[in-house]
Amino acid sequence: MGQYSNGANNLVDKGIAQRQAASRYLHDLVGLGVLREMPFGKEKLFIHPKLMQLLSRDNNQFQSYA
Image: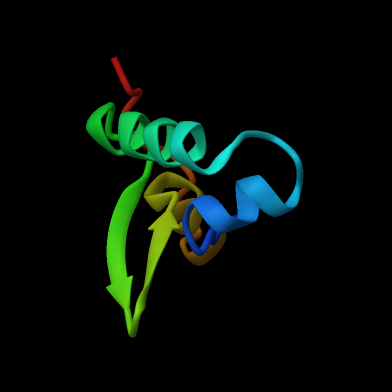
C-alpha cells in the first residue's frame, strides 16, 4: 500500500484480501492510529500521516505508535 489508498479496492485489486477483510484491515489501522481516513468525493482515502510528515518536513523525528 502506498502513501495513499482509495480504500479496500486497492487491496482487493492487488489480491491482498477480499473486500470485507480489506475494509476491516484498513479500519483496524485507523483505530491504531497508523492510518487516517479522509473523505475524497465518493471515495475514502487512507493516509499514513507519519509518512506524509517524513516526506514534507526537514525534521524527520516523530512519536512512536505505542
